[in-house]
Length: 513
Image (cartoon, rainbow, N blue to C red; front, side, top):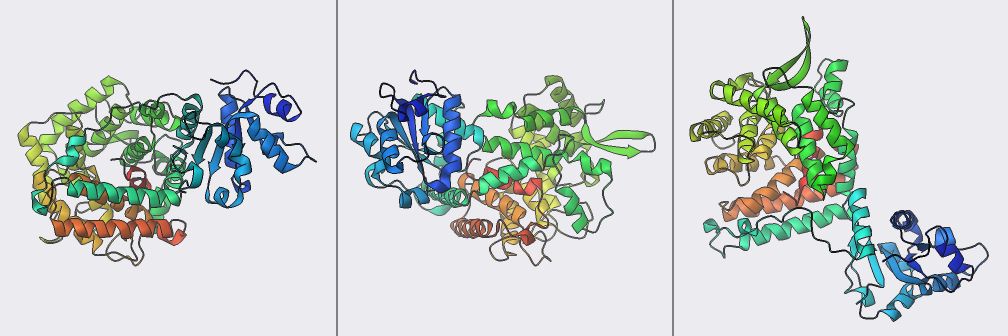
């Protein structure tokens, strides 16, 4: 319960000598974390709590040590903004009064808030902290206010069924849970490493900045196309964005957001929903706007329709748009000319994902047809299957293969497991300094593609029980080296040459798929 002292007056009046009131929170912080402390104080006061903050309430000319002691004594609880700097700089003067009042931690008089990945030690080692590491602003605000109010922190969505982690793995000849346990431990290590370098936050900001005025994603496509030496994009092409890129962005942003309901209300999600609705043709199909001799029209395709239907369902958009899209797909899938699709392998993969997700129901014959198309479409060689990005396009791009694998249902359908595994192992054989290049002839690794690979590796390790011990060990080793490459090279511009939305999105999904 917040105290009756108003946020605007409580701290100042306490320090000016009013001894009959106590602030709800004194916020203790190292100077380098002042911005965090101010953010915490502001949001607590907006939530109806009173705070004392050195930056706001300590008067010039007073003794800072005495003021710290008085602030701690005249606050009901003390927030410790935990970082490596705090551990070095600060002394018991900040948290001593709160500790003396609540030595067992029963009443939560000391509330650690971790803004860096540091371990709590000493007298606060056993206290439960509020973690701001790797979360967005809304999630951090929600966690802070829940801790301040002492509310029960039951999640808003149902937990995943844990049985999928206990499926027997006959190929390993070890206890059934061993492979899943190893994968979960690896994921935890990788997530901690990425969070330590604030990479999920950077990726989240990058994804938001890549959204175009149209509501679709693809701002980064302009530089990507320029690197291929293509004719410059027209204004329509540039502002149009991509339906696959937009779908990829939404999947990633939703995975990053702790609250599905809050995600649906974000400006990015609302604009994306409008983007898809505006790209549905009269026959129910979806596609990009293109210029033709008769003016602007929608160039619909099976691939784009599958992405659009999945996205509109995710965004809880109009049911009529979904039904028309499904009708279009059912009319065209049995006689589809996959080579006419811009990326032939991602079309059947997207349909399989939509079918598994419950958006559409195909008969067994159609599902087998989609799987067969993916197996036969991996044409480079028996040992190294990859998928061609544009029909007869001569250059094999690792991006196309990884995007196709990323779309497949979890776990990988058994008929595709061998093809997918060989494709992944072929791609990782071209490793460059821990990262993956955009295509076999590239000398430099690519940040975005390495992000997508890391996400895929971790999901395959966690969900594909039939991987052999040798393959699993290889994937674990590559996942660790890829995570090292990403954390060490994230800010080096030379590794961003081919990166765009549908590859960078992988980093936001690590550990949550």
